[in-house]
Length: 364
Image (cartoon, rainbow, N blue to C red; front, side, top):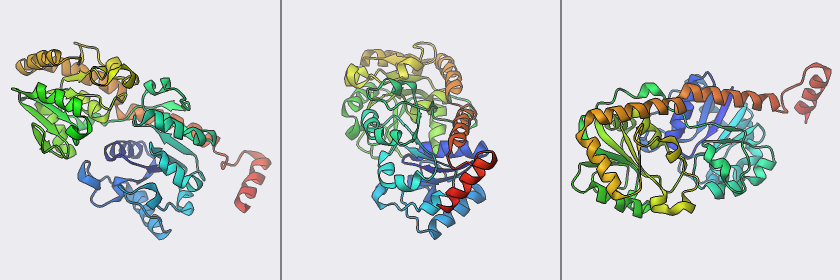
């Protein structure tokens, strides 16, 4: 199938494009992979083959305009370009639909949630759902939202298991990744800085220069190496989302994950769609903590006992693989895309009625 993918998140874009490509689809992205080098360099460029190169040339020839960090109003997505694809997948940004529905809806459109602005996006999607837009959830927790527009499938984020080499835990350090941590999540940042006091702590992500342990923006290769070598990963859920990519990556890497229960910082109301506490079995494949004292005691044991950390991390990696491995996720997408293609009104039906209908559509 020929897939037009519209992205707002570089890391997820990389994972899903690679998954679709490896599953045999022809895919092209209006996203970070369209820029050279890939926007921010958080993920390496992908080879999308001759199809990707051809579509890039056609996009330019037809007057398309796109920049990864530009608002939807600054984009131009030509209708003739959309006609080259079988389906369009739009990642989260309902603004893309507001501005470009007239072009994108020439083919089936799938809106892919990513756990951001859950309630606001839900309201914004009402009209597009009514117009036939498909909805793919990334977590079953989203189905409990008020005014939910429903779903056509729940499909989690994919990760390629082969990216993750055996965990070593050679560095007795607590590791965390979050960009602009102090400014974006002040209460959680202060909790983590208190936890870091007297312990080796490393914080990945841009705009963290004024925070303890900052190591800056990490390439994908460097991120995987730090997940492999550090002894503990501390996960905070703010602003509360069901789960995030950095949680998946840590869990899959075999580093033991210590997760802060979001209600401890954000309260029960703002944490009602969090899913981490349902995924982690406390004390078996990870840990859930509510207080600084709990977090410190668990981290100290993991820092002091590599074998214990290895056992917890291995169980976490095994469970994560069941939930997030890309070949399993690809099969779920394939089932949905097969349904979407079968329902596409542009597909000619069998017999004379189908042939006459196809002629009518071609002439209109």
